Amino acid sequence: MRLPLRTRLTLLYVTLFAIIVSAWAVFVVVLVRADLYSGIDRALDSRASQIALSLTGSVEGEFQDITGSTLVGVAPTEATAQLLSATGTVLESSGDTMSVDPLLPQSVIAGAFRSGTASVHTVVGRDGETFRVLIVRMTGLDQLIVVGTSTDTADASVQSLVFMMLLSGPVVLLVAGGAGWLLARRALSPVAHMTATASGIGIEALGERVPVPPGNDELSGLADTLNGMLDRLETGVRAKRRLVADASHELQTPIAVMRTELDVALASGALQPEAVEVLESAREETDHMARIVRNLLTLARFDEGTLRLLRQDVGLRATSEEIVASLATLARETGVTMEVSGDEVVVLADPEYLRVAVVNLVENAIKYSGVGSSVTVEVVPVVSGATVTVVDDGPGIAADALPRIFDRFYRADGTRGMASGSGLGLAISREIVEAHGGRLEVDSRVSGGSRFTLWMPTGQGPAGLS
Image (cartoon, rainbow, N blue to C red; front, side, top):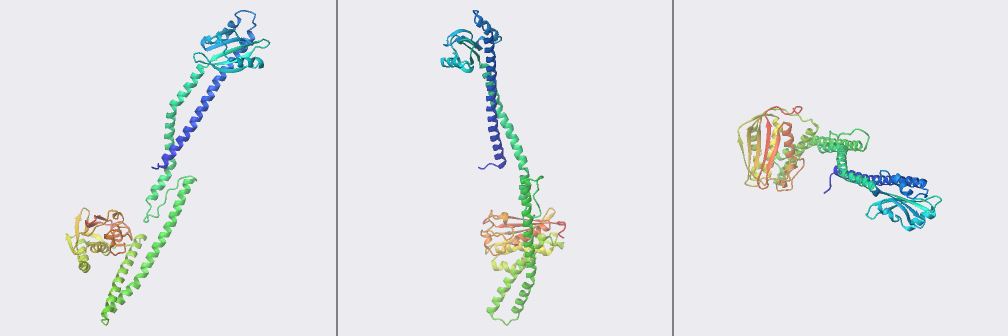
């Protein structure tokens, strides 16, 4: 599963932070250890120089006295000193018991005697204790001074530092992760706002634009690009809507002329039966084309906001009965029975457009119902309005098609969507009902019929549409 961008950015930030902190911790530990050992080495060099300057070799026990004075305050087990001959024999010693034997290998002792240069080495005692040991040749004498100090204190300090870093590391990473999450959230917040706005911009709301974040960065550039794209889309959609509106308006006249000429020809009575059949078929197709053009023009007016509703009192039952009567011929041809039920309810609406909305619902019910089925138009008064419900016992609508059933030009692939039609009827009905301040809903199941419920308010609809 792909993680969200915010989570991925946070994980990347924490990973890089952990790598950097780990490298820094290793560097600090190495640096502190080197600094502590450097301090031990300086102390050894100072001690060896003090012994070399004070030692004359003429008094017995002088070496122990001198080394004792240089190790004041130091535990005997944490320091050691030796006076070696050129061959590596321990002439005198003091401090830790390990000093009775040479602390360094013979090769190191011989090398220090030949070169006369001081050198520092790390050795491990009998009990596993680690010592830093300095060996230096005394000037003018065939003897070497070896001084050593335990590194336990320094090593304990380094171990404490490592322990504190390991203990605080998870806390630091947790805090860094929280900070990274907040930073990622803040950085991506403009993207979230743009996404939320863009997701709400549809074909009916192309005038909206995504918010442009302040500043001159990649996010503001993205917002400007999206807004520019929306500008172009809005211009193109408006141009297409204007084309549809103009074309629909221009087509009305020639279609009306064609319809009139066909009616005149059919009324002449001097035509052969074959010619009458052809002309009647042409008239039906002309009527169908006229309905499509009228629907397109109506939708164009809705889109442009130029539709005007002439409201007056309309009886829903009377209107329903008139519609059922006008579609009786279609119902008989398809073998469908129709009835109207309910009491009269008066609403304030445009009678012509309201009739179109209900006609589309009843026509669909007739077309998509089989022979022997029935269609019922129910008028029911409800709170603050009334409903007109068109019920059929046809094949129903598939569940995946219901969310798009009111979309323009949409026709489902299921049984109900196989009948002829332009795919505009339900879209027209919804636009008309919503323009009146009402709503249109559908409840349908495959093989269970469909219920289209048109709710109309009894009061005034939205301002600007009347």
